[in-house]
Length: 305
Length: 300
Image 1 (cartoon, each protein chain N blue to C red):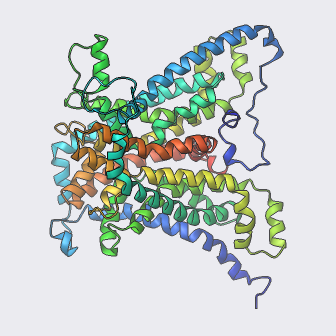
Image 2: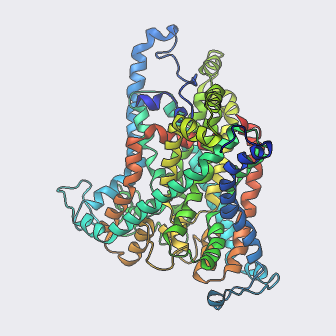
């Protein structure tokens, strides 16, 4: 929590850079006599906050609640599970385990491809005085406006010729493109602020540019790399459009596509569908718990830098 | 044998080797589709194209067919309604929450990150969950509304052509609120507290100080949020497919789903490309706004 409180941009800044966001705790001396009023205000805010959370997260609670109860398809489902029943999860696992594995493989592959391509580019755009560097960064930002369905339209036809339809490689390459612009912009913003002396020292030691990138810049950019990697993983994991359009058989089927087909085929079995939904939300939940400060930082810096 | 100082020409080339893979990638996955879609929109894709790969040029035929189809005009209109409605809701609620959370209180950090969940889970999953909640007969929302006597009969959230689009907008607002909240919250933190305190000392009420101090200072962030929101909302597809599949009776068909239908269900990639191009033009208009708003921000 303390990490979150210190602002949203930490992961996108090098360790040395200071932020001036922390406000003096407790406010100015002028306010000190009003501490009881502040405490009461805190209590009100806390209650309002809990209510907001309860309303906005209710659908997700309902997903879990439905997944944990037998006979979930009928109306009048109890608002709290009375006993733990994992039958829904068992059916969901039987049908989706393979698809979950596919999602993991595709997402990991996308992260690897994306970071391998993005890191050197971000480094060059940040540190080598390239002519046209600004234009390239601009172009990177504009790619966000290209609708996925337009990409899929063209990509499918190109993939048919290249034999990449229904292949892991094809889907990984397409999904990596979802995280690439974000990663380049984020990594570049970070690498700009690495002190020049550090890089010069590496060059003087006889390292080439690649050496300096691998042995100095990348280790220093650990936080930004983690953020870029996490988001690329989430983008690829959440991808539905490319999975739907670039696959015509069941050979490569990520869990998003699996769930979509599952509701089509098992309209009645809401318990298992919700259990599958829970399973496919796990990465998002895990990321939020394990890496919350990177997540918040990534959203802001990706949009604002 | 390696020379310590490479020849000048090599030195000028190596930086580009670092950028080349990324450039090639973006040209292939963003540049090529843009060009290819324009070309495809003048080609005749038929079922046999699927086997032969041959699609002869047919002039403006695709454009004429698409533009004279009533479904296209209706989808364009719905896409705009959907986008404006979603953005208004996401931004309004996101801003309210950002303001609420900038008054820090115990557990506010944890609450803010928990609120991100709707945005972090895959959109198809969010759509599936809401389909369950909004189900006319067995959904919990109707159950609760009827128990509270707020409605006399079950609301056909997703099953009536008059209601479905509004329901899809509401779900999309739910998904987009966290993104708006986080970015606006970040923007609010950049505004020095003294400025707002000064306004309060000058006798400005909370509304006055919000509209005359906070909002003007927040303007660049607001622009970025709205334009990014526009670009990701106007091309909506996943959510609609998961919630309604474009139905009932095409009442939730958007330009995104129409492109998908034409290209991948009817295998008429030419007509699909026409609709895709319209989507691109819509996005381009807003990309222009984005670049103007973001000008000079790139080198920060």
